[in-house]
Amino acid sequence: MAVTAGSDLLWKPLNHEVLMHTRSEKVRARILGLRIVKSLLENLKEEYLVLLPETIPFLGELLEDAELSVKSLAQEILKEMETMSGESLRQYL
Image (cartoon, rainbow, N blue to C red; front, side):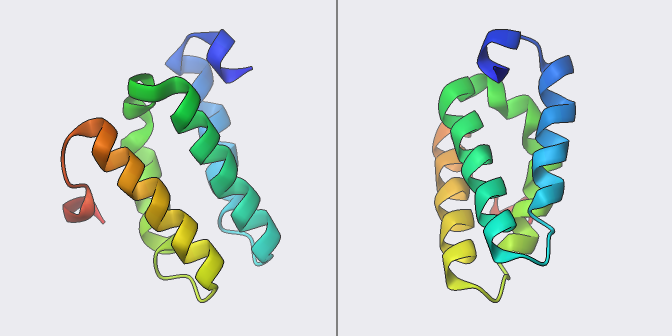
């Protein structure tokens, strides 16, 4: 759905809602939120880069999560974002 929308004006509210789920107390909700972010990143590719300023703080929080599975997925997504953007994003965390 997000890919066919073709507009960051529509992606931003969707991305924000997904990111808010990553702040849930439930591990499953955090993991599902991260999986959706990963899917958006994989499908939108470079177009997802406009959403990085909002996404990076959430990833920073998730990199400190107590659950290893959440941490690992957040690290994987961060690595993909760094590859796509061509720069290290750790300075923004």
